[in-house]
Image (cartoon, rainbow, N blue to C red; front, side, top):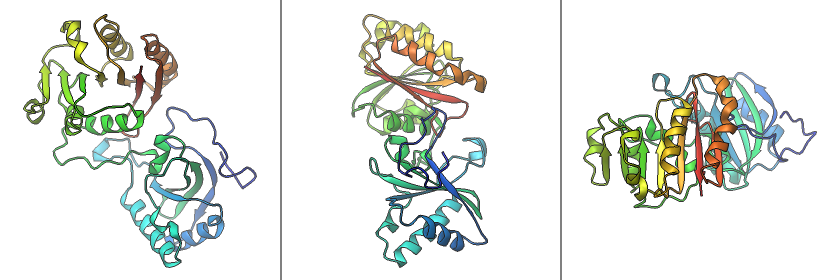
Amino acid sequence: MKSEFSVPVWSPAVPENQFVRCSGHALGSVQGESADLLIDEILGKYASIGWENLHIWQRDIAVPGWNNFEPGRSALAKLVADQFSQRLQATSDARFGRINQIANWNERVLDIVLIEPNYWWVGTHVADKIHRRWPGGVFMIDPPEDMISRAYLKIAEAMAWSQLPFQRGDAIVEIGSSPGGACQYMLDQGYKVTGVDPAEMAPSVAAHPAFEHIRARSLQVKRKVFSKFRWLVCDANVAPNYTLDTVEGIVTYPSTAIEGLLLTIKLSEWSKAAEVNSHLERVASWGYTHTMARQLSYNRREYCIAAWK
């Protein structure tokens, strides 16, 4: 929503869409020959509107996962953030340390989106949801050097975004677990993880004392096996109905008491995004009283469903 102060810059933003990473009020844009000039212009125009945190990020240059690209704070964004910090520190502005930090709940955030090195968009939003607390709506994580796959990033963000009450020692089952990126993250957090997949797991995951591998397709596993799990995760590269059929057969079995789900739903084409609400209704019909959906920042043509009882 564009704003020239005709509406309060901290008023509620337009309704969010599950496929919009960050939204708020657009105040305008700045262009110039140097970052110092652009910073001068922004501080001259917006220093007094009462922002408490400054989020600076670069518009994505590629699809997440392409050629090792991942969204978040790029080298350019870090450079601009450092320049802002130096400028605010030099003027004794107490906000110099509140740049690209996770915002506190309901904190007022000034957003700077780097379109080009010398062309920036400026806007505002209120950090009233978990993903709106993250710079650019991107969950920041430093993956280990031996990260097995991008599933590590996706499950980390899904767990943070969903705010499901995971506790160390919880039993989690992942459907379609190979090669083990998501399992790797969950094991790192201290959970007991069972992977269901006919393919091999990465050796480091397979050897972990808190990991069990059921080397079979989920339809081949007796349903009573799932009675010991509190949570179910699924990120299988199959059509949405196949994922939902598989999970429904597990969670509706009489002896199953799975409290929460994190499901990655693949979209064969973007038009399939229109089916999100029907997917949520189906999951709710299984007895999950709370459901929500979001395309995570590390997702590609897919989105995540979180559900819990």
